[in-house]
Image (tube, rainbow, N blue to C red; front, top):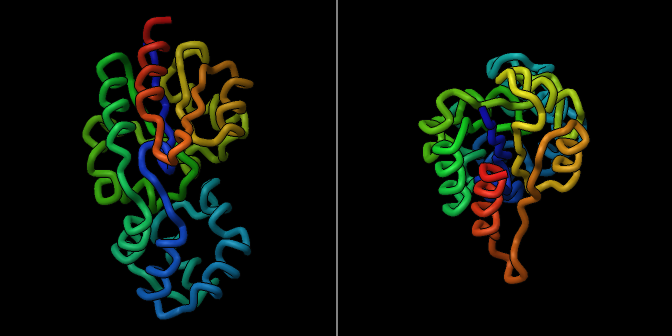
Length: 208
């Protein structure tokens, strides 16, 4: 069984933090500067991405304690979704990969992201069939070797039967160091995503 792991942000969906932060500020009444300097600069999002906050409720409670901004999960979703735009060619490549093997997310994100996938990523939740691995569940972030070995263990496949598609070269190299195949998803010279090459890489892995 081949497993096709896809990153989410800037691979399946374009992501712009500079759209998310203003929305969070508007929803919470707390300034962008304060949110960024306390939560993100303080390392709390990174901590959440390796599973230190085990539930969405705990994440939101700690977020409120650190920033003074009390959010509902719905508000968190609203701000996160405002920063995301589906990349149609990448979504099509994921659907094509699902016809060739098993597809899964492999994304550096906290638990609220995993809990919110039906809202944030309605184009892909059906085809994923619950294969929504995020770093918070696996207890490590890409490009750490253990996130790849733990992801492979979830499917019981050897590294050589899996591939990662990711916009981060560092993450791609980490996957290769773990023995996996990997493809670096990039933009064309005109700034558009090179989804044709992504689809070709899906087929090249299937035909290897």
